[in-house]
Image (tube, rainbow, N blue to C red; front, side):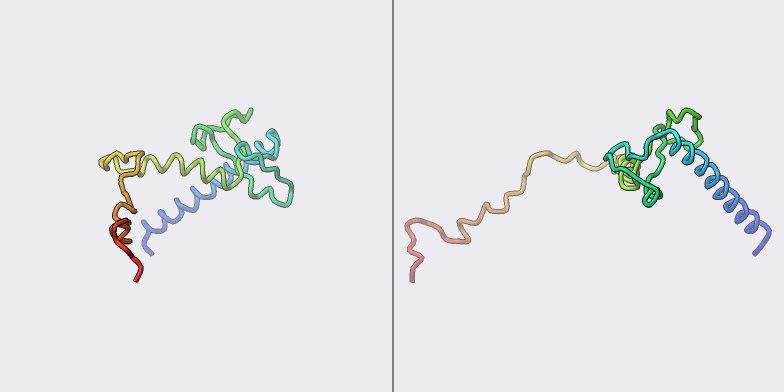
Length: 126
């Protein structure tokens, strides 16, 4: 491994360590000042399942951590994933794709009468 790769590896490790330290700080603060309840679904947490309660930054800026907790909301892991998916999904949509109609245009049974030969003048009995 050359010197450049070592510096890059060290930078990544340092960034992860700093993120983890910062996260532990604001998470601990949020758990002290906010109830242990998901702000979306209302699920309640205790010491056994507290690891499933996460802290969401309302403005999506993980460096914005006011001590009053006004930028945080406690969310369960499922609601937190959903919150971020709602942010990501519109960004990944193809802006050049056709606008989809809200009405169905496919008629799956349109030729059913022909297939069943349901002409009232035709006797299907053999």
